Image (cartoon, rainbow, N blue to C red; front, side, top):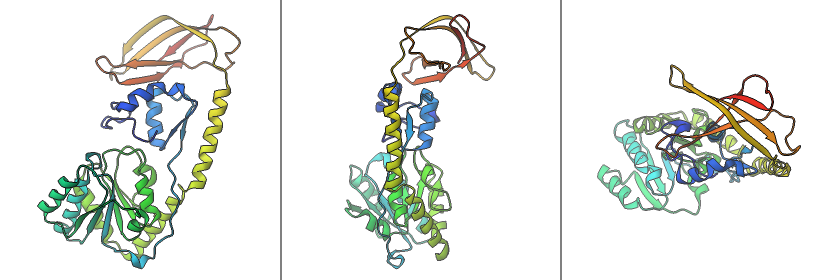
Length: 334
């Protein structure tokens, strides 16, 4: 899964699914293994579909470049690499850097690398703010490692990411990342104040203040952050990530080798109610029979699929057994 499964994350794990997420997430059972890029996204998906045992967290990897000489780096230079489209919210970064220079009295520049439909709109914003000498659209680059190696900090102002590979590219070159706290990625990579910064999502004023605070740090402290960023990027180098893939593929093969049990489940009774906090309490009695000896000795798990009336939002809750089964009947609370 290379993107967020949510269309927007305004309501956390219960937010509406994206177009592709609405197709794939309800069908996770059909896969022997599913790779998710971050633990946070995996947690949110499990909260949505239940923990069915086939989800693996495997981050993206990046080969580490040769580290640049620190003297080649411009201490006031910022950089942003992204497609020029609304999702990336590059206008936030432009206004924040403008704020750094005009309101906060610090000197910062920002080079923006990328192409997309928002180019002319962003150029107009730069001209309107009068910062064309500080903020420039550079187009596409074939040498991101060189760009990061010559810059002091990088910005990520997207509204959504699945991982933020650009953060790793920045950190591996010793360029300190400053990123919005979004679903998903930045908080899984960056330790705030140690190897980068996490800023409240959408808070342009806080973003500007964070940039100014970083630029004001003593050179020795900046160097420590750069070293910490490079070290953290090493956790996502190819070798450890390939090992994760090896383990996940072995687990998927083992899962596939287990024959599916032939079962019949009949609901014999139901009851429901609501608690004072509005939580729904659903109680089900179900009779489970196996067509063969394929059902193992483990206690079966029951899951309840639900959809909100008037909505296609998919949820599934894991049930808790109450008491011992009698005559093949199980009492479950969802």
